[in-house]
Length: 245
Image (cartoon, rainbow, N blue to C red):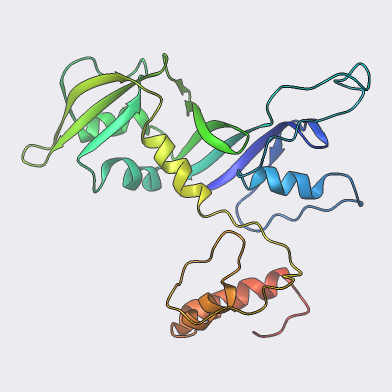
C-alpha cells in the first residue's frame, strides 16, 4: 500500500501542483534552491498547516487576501489482498460509504461484498485533506459516495453473513481508518538531525514521524539481525557512500 499520486492546492509556493505520480520503492525529488521541494514534502507528510499561496496568480494587489484552505488530494494504491485484510478480517462491524453498488437487502455474504468492492487486482482510494487534518473520502476505485451517509454491516461468524444493520449520516468509514493508519506511517524529518543525535534508552521499536527516537529504535532493532540487515541494505541504496551501519 503506497501513495501513488497526489496534488497540492494553495500551499506555500504551490497554487496548483498538477498531478504528481509516485512509484513503489524509492522516489527521489531534485531541484534548485527555493523551488518548493521542502513544501512538497511537507504537504506529502499530510500533516501540513494552512499556509495559502500568495502571488500575482491569485492576488490582485498587496492588500488582497487568500482565504482558501491549503489542500492535498491523494490516491492510495494497494493490492486487493491488503484491502481484504483491512476490510474483511478481524472485525465485527464495517462502515462503508453509501455506494450505489451496495446491496439494499439486509443480508450479504462476505464473498459477495468482496466481489463488488474488490473486482480488480489493484485498489485506488482518493482522499482530500485540508490544513493537514480530517481526511475526507472522495472515491474508491470507480465508486463515489452518494452523500455523507455510511452503511454499517455486522459480521456473523456462524453463517458467514454480513447483516446490514443501519445507515447513518456520517462521513466516517473504513477508509478514514485506513488513511489514518497510513498517515501514522509517514515520516518527515531533516537529514541533518540537529540536536537529536541521542535519545534515552527504551523499548520502543516504532519510529516517531520526526525520527527523534531513531537511536532507541536502532538499538532495539539490533536484537533482530535479519530486520537490521534489511534496514542497512535500504540505507545503502539511498546513500551510496555508506558501506555499513
